[in-house]
Image 1: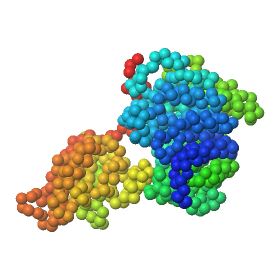
Image 2: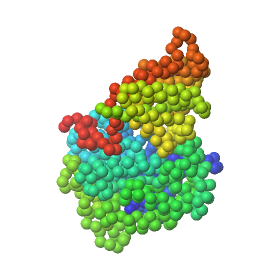
Image 3: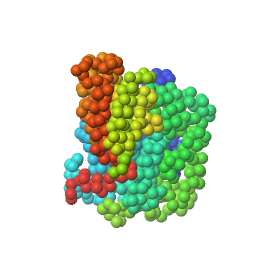
Image 4: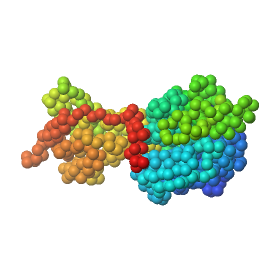
Length: 391
Length: 212
């Protein structure tokens, strides 16, 4: 199972001091957070993509490319990449390039984006949001799998004889997750392609998350990618920890009460009751996170949101250290003990699997497991390389 | 068909306890019930008092999701065969609380739903708010609003207005008869659940891309 950090990249005043850091400091903080994520033994760092203040990460592959050079093992990902307003041709090129730079340590998560004006700013119409997600991803999927693409759609200029360069590293496209909070259509899309499905999980009641994931699993099986419990599921989570739970609540409350997303709304207690937000001790975080499995089944990726609402960098880094030292080792052990053998890990690039195997001192996996993408009903070439699933 | 059941949800935005808005809502519900029974239809009435959801409605607007209690109220309305919606008139329109609820009910959720609109106010001078505020709101929501809306001013609860006007009791009865007829004529509403019956993706793609 993969554990990591996802960051929205907001510049928010610290409500306890009134201090607002600069964009530069926030960008540097994201880099420090990503490096800390690797240092404490977590697996994934995912950046958001935004094109409006107060968010800084407008250029994910620039940031992730830098991180590729400054990290060794960390999987670099997004949460999310805007499949609607980005040109799918540019996504294909940028993330293939990133794959080469990072030696395969790349995957990405598609999202539609929910900021209305971004659509017209990028020449699109929000009323086409779902159509853009379908059409752009359909093109992206082909660009990474077919060397020469002729394509015509409704929402982008046609392509004739186009080759997206560089080709995916070793011919293996980056693994793709589809993220959606409330749209069953996106769970259906993820299932159709045999891709992963990620629910951000942190703003919604669990019965809704359960319905989204159950739909994805059922349809994953329907499309012939494997059994429902072999579908690739990721979840978000939101935590704040101190050794004593009352200290955690007292310290986090002003950040919660003034947070851009839920400030002025429900109480911290109600929000903790109705969503997966956990403010308390590391043991409480462990208990709550293990219970996610009861909601969605055995799953492959758990990302935590820790750096938002104006929390100071030093505090955020402490949180990541606590995750790495006190929480994730227990979660790894407990989840692994519960997971049946036929449930796969999240796919990673064969180079990542090989590097991990070399570090662990075991033989490299053969790189040809029963990969979801190989049984997709799409017109993909039969010789399409599979993504390795590490043992 | 033998004694088919129909569910009616009454949404009342009254603030006082007791409120004249709730009083009007209950009279409308009882009259509708009577007319449906006469038509051989067994009604089931459920009342949603918006006052009880006031905090949760604000929280829903801010966080994007309803509390379990509010979700149950929304589900009741979405699953109903008929709706009776009653608001006090404040500042020339329905109350903010009333609008909050219909702001968070999913779009198309009320499409085709037989609906009776009603309102209360201090004097009859505000009665046209029914026609310029409530009726357009439910037209936007594609509800099947019956022709008669019922406005009750404070004086209507007395002995009954000018002789030339239909009394409140008569207006309630006329509106309820229209609602009952609309509900009885309607097939039981079934909502397709996108989680149970997703549109198959190959079908989605055929609709999205030009034939190759």
